[in-house]
Image (cartoon, rainbow, N blue to C red; front, side):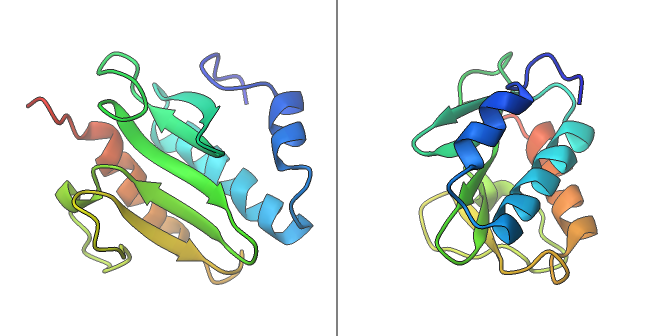
Length: 129
């Protein structure tokens, strides 16, 4: 991955090193998906998760695209502006004011194409528009 706005492989490996291999695999595939679906995204570790945002629109909240959070037994892909995203596949969960998420329990069961569409929609969403 040669996206200059992304952390180094070393930094990502260090951040994910304490997680089970199956969950690391999901997180790394999600990271690749973000890099291809939102090539202008910036990546940073904050709040204990991988944050992806459009720096031209602001930081991880205002310019937020998505977050990858590795939990004890699954990976959560969250969208800070999720309530504003079209979700034709009905993947998004949650009842917070704006944030929505998708729980991914295994690599093989992940709805990769639906995830790509949501990431693309989140990357295109501008809360100021």
